[in-house]
Structure formats: structure tokens, C-alpha cells
Amino acid sequence: MEGPLHIEMKTNGYPLSRLDRDRIDAAIERIDRLTDTYPTRRIHVTIERVGHGEECHVRMLLAAARHRFVATDRAPSVAPAIQRCVDILAEEVQHRKNRVSRNHGERHVRRAKEEAGIFDPERLRAAYGRGDYEAFKDALGEVPDMIEAEVGRRIKFHPDAEALLGRELTFDDIVEAVIFDAFEGFLGRPENVSFREWILAKIDPCIDETARGARPTDLAA
Image 1: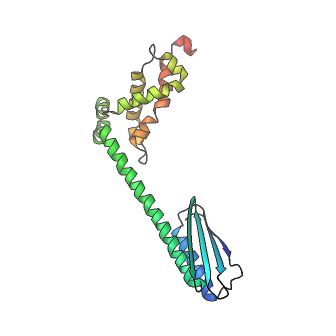
Image 2: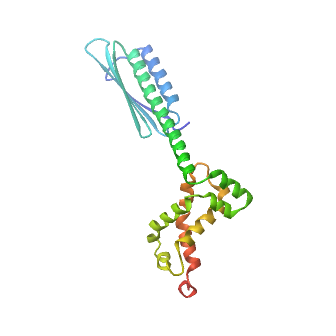
């Protein structure tokens, strides 16, 4: 459970009965349970009398992290208006949670399909298990081309390495360094990071490391 639910209430002089207060407490408890995964939560409850009787207008604003949910209702008394507002907020919050969960699932499936199109994960795992570096490279499919294209975009941010290109250093050297580093660290790849993100993150360190190894002794001194 994250931080506590902060409550702000304005009754604007509207007299609350015991039933009203009980209904408000129950409403707050329900919202508290429904939003307990959000790091910050705040709810503003405003009650205003309509006319000279007990009829009222209730407005609830729920701030959960960076999300905002609003519910309003007008009823002959506070209790039913509060209940209706809470039902609306609960529906909005649940809809938001469902959408986030659905989007996460869709991203996972889309990422898996994209990766399946450029390399063979099963062959990669099998090659790594056998310690077969050449088979690992073969299983990468289009990944080396992707790495080379990314190296071409990033090399300008590594002036020392760029100065060595065409003489002591080639794109193939850097691509090979990235692939070998991926082979060495394959077992430690985080499960929540896509293979593409993981291997592309190795490019910048490998550019610098490969350039240091390729630099002539007189330049390195």
C-alpha cells in the first residue's frame, strides 16, 4: 500500500446527519481501497445546498498520482449523492486501471512480435547454452545490421573513435564488440527489458572500448 489518502471536505454550512457522515466515511474507505496502489492520493469533497431545503449538489475530485477523476451529483439529500459520486469515481478508476493493463499487454505482445521478426530467440538461447559463439551470431539474423545502423548514428558523439575510423577502426569492429559483449552477458539480461533495448544499450560503451583498443600507442600515451 502506498501513501495515505488525504481528504479535504467543504460542507458550506450544509448540516450533515449521522447517516450522511457514515455514508461519507464508507465512500472514503472504498476510494482508499481502490486507489491504494497509487503513490499519492487526495480527494476533495464539496457539498452545496440547492435552494432552501435538504437538496444538495455534491462534487468529488480525486487526484491519484498524475491522474484526475471527477464526479458530481445532485440529490434530495447528501447520502444518495455521495453514493452516486463514489460509484462514478470507482468506475473511472477501474476503467483507467483496465486500460493501463491492456496497453501493457499489447505492448508486450507487439514487442515480442517485432523481436521475433529480426532474430531467433530460441536459437540464441540454445547457442549460448552450448557456448557456440558462431551459432549465436547466426541466430541474430538482422540484429547486426540494426547495430551497424545505430553505430553510424552514434559515432559522431564519440570524436576519439570517429577519428580512428577507416584506419585503425571499422564499423565491423564495433559491431563485433557489441555482439561479443551480448554473448558474454546473455544470461544476465533483465527479463523486463527487450532484447533490442538491451543490445542497443551496449553500443556506446563498446564504441569507446573498441576505440581504446584500436588507438595506436603513440596516440594513447
